[in-house]
Image (spheres, each protein chain N blue to C red):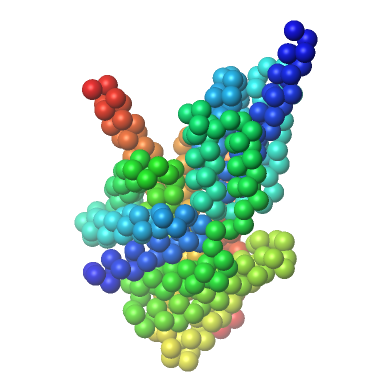
Length: 255
Length: 142
């Protein structure tokens, strides 16, 4: 009796770690708060802890089995959007609850997902950002002539954000410099006669940087009752928009 | 019109590359984005922007639910691609720019508009989820 309870105790720790790892990957990859909580409690339930609770905010995950095992906490410092990872963790959790995977296999697969690099290389992402900028310029009723400078400028802007973020750890600073660069290039492209409407070029080019999705997710979290997550995501989005607005505003006030 | 179709398709799928969506989901993302944007443009001519955004998001949400079911991937992958053109990121930036330029009245106006639009998108997504759940329940009970 003693040995079996001891044995189940160690696996309980493993299961808690497993659920926390899944939650961590999802939260770092930009999944919604309710999805993280839902996935964690589903995984726990399929591994024999039906009453497990988790508390998820953008910066921390707390997880308890509501039994005698200790509550564990995981701090999240860095967040990106990586839908591939969200999808993979989702898949693992579904297989786990359909009993196609054991806990050990799930643990191993989660480890590979956690270590995996981004699915697309940086140059491809820059190219995608350039295309996005050009297309948004056209969608916001800019002319095709404005799309050409947008293609270049938004590529440069995205590359600048990526590079600067590696250089300095403060994201808002990188966003500020990048949007300043975008504003400057847009201004000169209009001056040189390559582009026509500076406003249309700028709005297209900042679209890859702008936190539109974050704002929507924040409101979504608020509606779902995740008040703390909603407010902190809102603050995050506000700061990003502020950095971009300041960068562009600085260019406009200089010239 | 055709130009808008093509650009919204490319914009949505390229944005999904930025968000690291799986390669096999990119076409569907672009499709969802295209549908959402075209619907938005049509509705925006007749009704208020908030209503147009809400309507377009509901349709995008339903399409994403359908894609998620048939391709066995989470809904968020497709709905992100679909709502990206509708999302008020540009407005949020505009609001901040107006504040920086000391035009506070315009800034507040843009800010409130951005908040209302994101509320409309969130409500649209939730509604489409509820619709999806009702549909599923009906299917299982029959």
